Length: 498
Image (cartoon, rainbow, N blue to C red; front, side, top):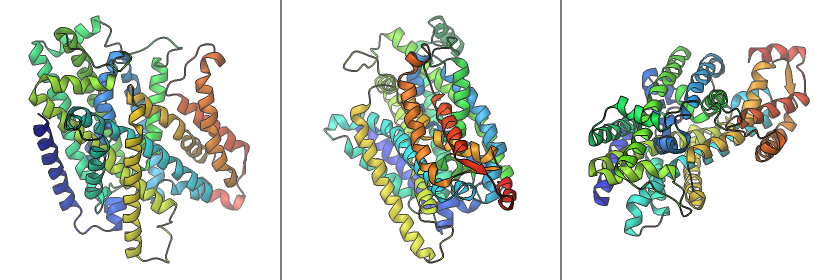
């Protein structure tokens, strides 16, 4: 079995490398950073599904049905609102300014320190969040393949990152846009195929499965307890803001969108992605219901940790590997696709952000394009190494569903970005003192964390969920307002145009 899985992994990787070879021919810095702005919008829209889902969604969303039922769907509904804001508010701004890194807007609107602060928070958030997504992929392959061979955990981590580095090294975002389409296809096929196999094994239909799951409470869509962390309104509002910050204010996601030929194409891409995303997440929730029902009907023992608590993230792989050789192969293909789609764009975006917001690639004339190329390659390797180290370091801390952990990190690291962009877009007649922005951006997440820890005591039993992101962004906004002043009349016209 392990040899078969390894063979599948190698074949899939070769396919990715072939795509990278053809898409990276005659590539230069412009290709790496912007894809020469020639990507077909429908290709980007379809590939965005795989990039958004990642290994966390692939395993955590189905596994999370065991403890969270279908309440994740509230988050998905909020995505639609978030994507609409991106299409109608953020994309027009980015295209108007012809940005390569979206954090260059902060320099134009507020100043140099604000730009670097925003870029630094993105780098921190993406490095941690995406590495955790990739960690889950490496973790499962280690547990079910490499561990039996006596191979240490760090080995598959190094292999994965090295391969991703190889196929993004030259083509960058131009390559990622096309590899994401392949990865989206296999990721969805893996989920659908697994559901079909389980239905066939149990000789039931989808309606019968959902009815049986409903009878046991697993298809509960909305939590009505206002104090619960998954209260339905909090889920929808949080989903909207999560999309705005983790897509609209995220260089990785927006860099792909901005490879489209025009603003109109980019907007069509975003709105199409939002609709597709609903259907894909429904598939993964149904997958979760089918896995739990299968375990109940067959007596399959769900994986537990040392304390005897079911580990949600292990439910899908445990059943897939025990079900049949075919489902094992299908699972590995989907998992590898999810892992690649999560990491390739991230490495490219981290490199882009550092090159444009810290090394000033857009304005420097004292270095040649060849020198920029060499620096870009060194930075790309540097981030790959950091990415790998985070993956390896996280293993001792993994004890439950990672999807909540990813969103928790986003709530603290993207909050300052939410506050900065909201202030910049809606208070165009005011400008905060640029020198105070870094301090505000650090203080807001710290205060948010304290509020979250003591929320039950401070707010009569209320528990923060993903909406801690909104609290964080609001505190940043208020602090920026406190250190702001009216824009001088000679600068007002420029500010209002932004």
